[in-house]
Length: 114
Length: 117
Figure 1 (cartoon, each protein chain N blue to C red):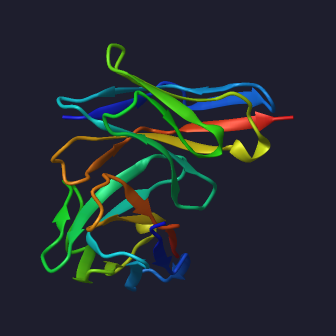
Figure 2: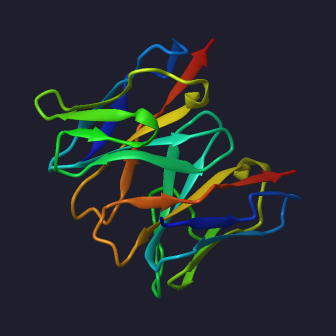
């Protein structure tokens, strides 16, 4: 069985400072991992994905994430936060052969302050 | 890139009526679509997997007679909330996988907010 834990339900940063959103996963197989962003009353947009290639994954809008198997982590980072980054972020895991069944984390609400 | 369209984006209905939500893949064929439900400030909960030309697979605890899913073509899946009640009010989101793509990536619709009075 697969699961994902987002360690922080809320993160608040100042504009221009780094962002760190934490995610730990559990999977019986080599998983695929994703980060999605959701703005209020909108659908989900894919930020980046890890599918067993390079462990450091670069996504859109300056975000990146590093897959660390030894730590079972896939934390999302951005060097400098922008006001437009304020949104809900979901860490998602999918196992091979699972028919694209995704398991979502509970989400992290990112607040960016001036 | 792949685009998934949901319609309507929001709907208000009276208790006891049925509401149909459409999910369309605009520029690719989707052999599999997924329906999720999201309560306020919570994560997405998978309701069912919709497969073109066959019956949907429902997750445990989801009433198949309450939430009817039809995937009649490779570009359209519909979710019908039958005899809706206020507790069915929620944000419903669909996603689809491009059947011709080897990538394990789903594209999500913008969601449909249902309010049952």
